Length: 372
Image (cartoon, rainbow, N blue to C red; front, top):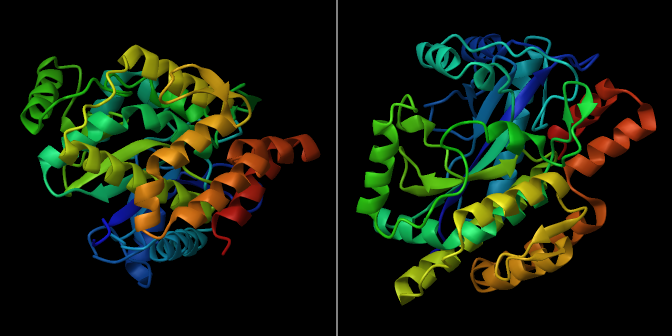
């Protein structure tokens, strides 16, 4: 069996390499890359693609489709390094933080679409300086893709818990491991969905949402997992950007394993779990609040259990596909390490506890973002 290809999009913060302050220089970073070469830009057909994002204090990077976990991890490191090189060209640095720890007033990227979003959504748009990690996994058809979406619903909150990397907001501890998820949840179409049943039903659901006028366009279909508009992939969007590149590769391997498992279930005619969407919202809230440092909602039993028990269930569910991809041992070790050491949220809080300075949290993240 040929492995499904997969790839990762990551959003990174732009900061002052000295004091860690925010730098609204995304357009200058892209201009530097264009003028000096050596750093591929969006549309160039290379790993290391760089794009502007919603706010000028952030960049988006993306990998090419990869077949193996080693290849993907290498590309994630490469694109982070490409972003760091381009940022350094305008006296900035990149930090893989899902929210900015210090006080900041985001600066909108001046595109027509983003201006319309700012006008329509007010404070939701004004405060939307968050960085996620989106994983794309190839599917054979929209029907298979919808079959996958319907069957991975209960397994998405554990992915957020693994990647939680945004405890601080405007200079304060939010009390959450992933405050990004809370901020992102303000968008009208964000969150889990009901099972769709077919590609036609998916398209009808999207059309119905657009018909309400509450969304500007299809690009604002911000489901936790969706069919990509541009690629033949399922796009899983729940994760915080990870502090360390290997953790981003780990969650991508898990997503590919979940997609393959769900596709096999769809082909076998196994019905999706009919778990209610409101329960999935609570599971995602719990993952956002606790990360790996408390109880989570079990994806099958739908009750509160220790995080380790949820991660054991996640591994057991996807084990067959992970083993077929050659990823099982690496994923087992990676999850064990995160359960022991914690995700980025625990690291950020530890740095702040040691130093008492939010700027040191940012400085530490800069070092880790581009580390090999």
